[in-house]
Image (cartoon, rainbow over all chains, first blue to last red; front, side):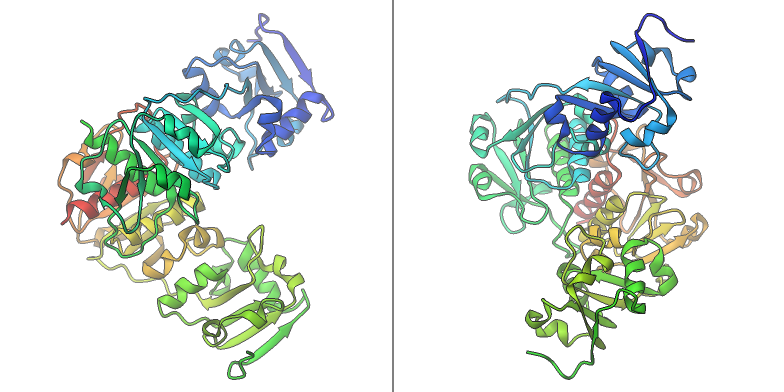
Amino acid sequence: MTDFSTPLTHISSRDNPLIKDLRRLSQDSAAYRKQGKVWLEGDHLCRAALAKGLKPELAIFSESFWPQAPREWTLCAAKNIVITDALLPEISGLESPARMGFVMALPESALLNPNAPSLILDRVQDAGNVGSMLRSAAAFGFAQVIALKGTAALWSPKVLRAGMGAHFALKLIEGAAPADLAALAMPILVTSSHMGQFVHQQTLPWPCAWAMGHEGQGVGDALMALSSVKVRIDQPGGEESLNVAAAAAICLFASASTQK
Amino acid sequence: MTDFSTPLTHISSRDNPLIKDLRRLSQDSAAYRKQGKVWLEGDHLCRAALAKGLKPELAIFSESFWPQAPREWTLCAAKNIVITDALLPEISGLESPARMGFVMALPESALLNPNAPSLILDRVQDAGNVGSMLRSAAAFGFAQVIALKGTAALWSPKVLRAGMGAHFALKLIEGAAPADLAALAMPILVTSSHMGQFVHQQTLPWPCAWAMGHEGQGVGDALMALSSVKVRIDQPGGEESLNVAAAAAICLFASASTQK
C-alpha cells in the first residue's frame, strides 16, 4: 500500500516546526495570512479541494490511518507526512480531530471581476454565518464573494469548516473597501426592514450583487449609499428578525429562481 | 434609584448555591432540564422575554451596573440579586459577559397542536443552526417547533443566544418521536436533492409542517416515510449543498409567500 513515489516524512515531536505551524493554522483564525498557507482538516474539505483540481503542498496522515489512506490522497501532494496519533489534537480545531488533512498555498486574493454576480459581506462576524453564505453563494450562482474589511477571515478554520468546500468554487476577495465596489457593473441590492418592494413580488436584476451586513448593525452607510435596490423580506409571523445567513439564502435563491 | 418594593440580595461568593446553579445553566447545555430553569443572559433576550409577558423569577445585576439598571428590569422579577462584578464570568457563556440577566422557569413543553403550522427538527446538531431556524419559524408564521430526540437542546444557552428571542414567540416541543407526528393534521414536507418539484415552481400546501434533518445525514427514514411532499431547491450554481438553516429559511419563506 505504501507509495514510494511521493517523499514521506515521519514526525513524532510536538516541537517540530511544521507541527507548530499547523497548530497556529488550526487554532488562530488569522494565521493563514501570515503563513500564506491553509490547513484543510478532514476528508470532506480535502475531497472538495481535489475535486476542483487544487494540488496540496503536503498531505498529512495519522500513523494509524496511514495504512488505510486511499491512493488518491497519498499521490496528490508534493510530500506526505505521517505523524504520531498523539499529535492530532495539537493540530486540530475539532473536538474529534480528523485523521488526515492537506496543507495548500493560500489562493491569491482574486481581482474584482466587474461582471460576476457577487455576494458582498460587510463586517459579518460569525464564522458559521460566513461559511453558510459561501455555500449559498456557490449554490445559487454567485461566483464572487467580496468581503469588506472587518468581516470574519474567510480562510479561517471555522469558516472553512462551515463552508464545506464552497471556498473552492468561488472567487474570494478579502479586505475590500466600499469604494472598491464602484467597479461592479451591476446593481447592488440590500435588504431593508422598511424600504422597497417585497423580494418575492418583484423582478430582480441579473447579474446583481447582494450585500449582507453585520449581525447587529446591518449594512454600513457607505455601502447603503452605493446600493440602488432595496428589498424587503415579508415576515408575516411578525418577528422582524432573521439570521443574516438565513436572509442571504432567501435573497440569493430569489435571484437565482427569478432570472430564468 | 434603588427600588425597595422588590426584595434585594447581595452575593459576593462564588460558592453561593445560586452562583453554582447559574454556572451550570450558563455552561452546560442540558442543565436547564435538571433545574427546570432558564438563564437569559443579556439585555436582548431579557427584553424579548418581557415583551412577550414572561415574568422572571430572578433579575440579576452586576454591582457596577445596578445603579443604572432601568426600572422595568428592577421591578419585573420576584427578587433582585446584585452580584460582585468578579462573579460575572462565572455565570456567563459569553466572551464578554453581560451585566444583567433573568432566571425564569422553564416553560412547560407544549402539547402538540395538530393544526399549527410547524417546523420539525430531526436531530439537528448545531446550536447556531437551531437558533437560526427558530428565528425563521417565528418570522414566517410557523408557530410550533417540534424537536425530535437527538436535536440540540432548545433552551441551551447557545440556542437561546442564536434564537435572539424567537423562543418566546413559539410553542416548543422537545424530545418528540417520529410517531408523535402522525397527530399533525397537515402534510409534512421535506427537501430532497433528487425528488419532487422545485420549491419555487409549485403551490405549497397551507398549513404545513416542514421537516429539516441532521447536518450530515438529513431527515431520517421514519420521518421521510411520514412525509407526503418532497421538494427540491434548485441550485443552478451546481454545488448541491446548502446549510440546513439556509435551506429552512428558503422553504419556510416559500410557504409564507405563496400562501397569500
